[in-house]
Image 1 (cartoon, rainbow over the protein chains, first blue to last red):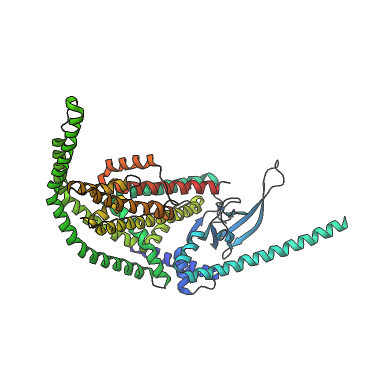
Image 2: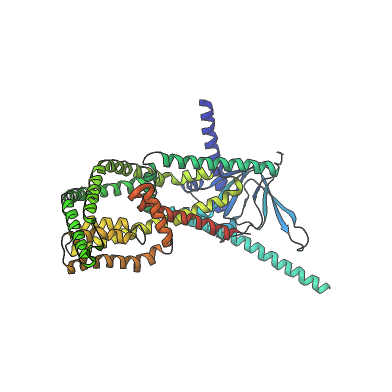
Length: 180
Length: 352
């Protein structure tokens, strides 16, 4: 009996340490001090998903981001070739421990998920949602501002990448139309 | 690689999780309702935690730990309340004992007033209508007064229990509420988790706004009433202000119920028309401030109950819990309305 209690106690503190490490390595929380990280750790939610279980589906309203603690996630995007044809899901990428996803939902109101995430194996995820961010901003604004700044940086980087891709595509399109 | 779980077994597992969560919530509800004084104490605890929560958050923003901030705010408010009650209790005691000695006189005065009206009706209508209200009203009123003072000791016992248990529960709600909510959310199945989290947050925010607005509103109405009555040197000014503040929690009927005792006192003391007019003016000014400034500014945006709903809810509250039921029925109904509206709006917003 005592062993079970102690095992659980250590398992809990092991998981706490794991969550702290994962948060520290995630760019959004990377500038936080130890104390601030512990506060964030008490605010976030650790969720376990079985292999094949969906984390979220494309088109659903999302309220926050996930950091993959361990396991693997497959990201699918539905392509609508035509109204009459069935929707085809295409595997876009596989995420591994330390990767994060869904961060746009933290700042966008009624944000819809742009892809479907399904656990490829049994996976643990840290969920960090809009209400959690508001709670941090209300109780520890300095910590909240640090998170927001890094979040802005991440979103800015994504925008840059997208702009680059759009420019490349435009260039390709121009070349193709010239050939025709 | 671990086996991929089939969708049907996943749904089954989630359904069981959901049933377990519902059963747990039902159990908590049954315990709260069944244990004596726990329902009222919990309601008081919610009110206290919604009122003091922002103060604790404010201290926490100044880098004070949550435990220390909670302890500091609760001690400060507790000590202030003790000081206020040290001043107020002797006053209330003497007022109540004065009221107890005055009561037979009030009842007699009221009886006399009704007799006069009866005699006038008799004069006008002649022997056609036979009325004998006076005796009935007097006996009934005497009985009610006796009941009130007979029941006072058990009421005080309940009040003391609630007054101790409420703040005790509130302390832990403010300090560890977040952890408790997260623990409960941990039991929610994965596919409902984001919705549940979002709803809990929105409902919490709306109810918090509502509770703080109503408390501030009633406090201001009570203070204005007391101030006005002191100004025209009317007896029992503080007691009447407290009554006006408390009954103000009941929309539509509350303001009238709050003013009745003052008019009864004026009536049986044989106040002149001008004095009665002044008393009426005090209540009208307090209600004008409430209706013209406080409600549009703070409450109306949050919750608005239809007059018919208000009446039905108050009657139901009175049937279940008496006077206390009348006062808490409206906040409970408003809370339910906020909850249902928030869920409805959420469903509309998230409809794909």
